[in-house]
Image (cartoon, rainbow, N blue to C red):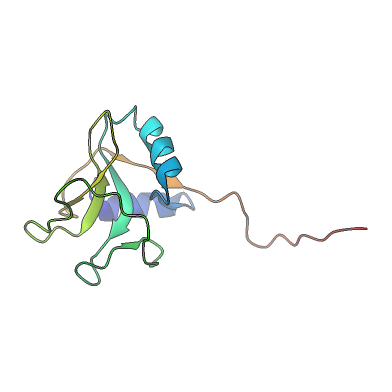
Length: 120
């Protein structure tokens, strides 16, 4: 599936294309991806402005664990993916139209519309 297809599929499930926010998230994603034996789209791109990487919610990213020499924007690559590497889950940029077999969707545990009150 392409980056756009992965993003759309996650949205259909009421979730979003996941992106690691820190090393702990990266380790969890690696576990979900069979210890790095599967490549996956992640929810990060610089489609809007080259070199400005944002998550699929449109927020600037502060955690950017790129592989050495990445992102390189080779042939206008604008979408991020987790590469296949057993020892690390470093990011690489890729053409958004390329096909990958996996995408990890994230769904928040917080549900909109629930009012929380406390009693003393």
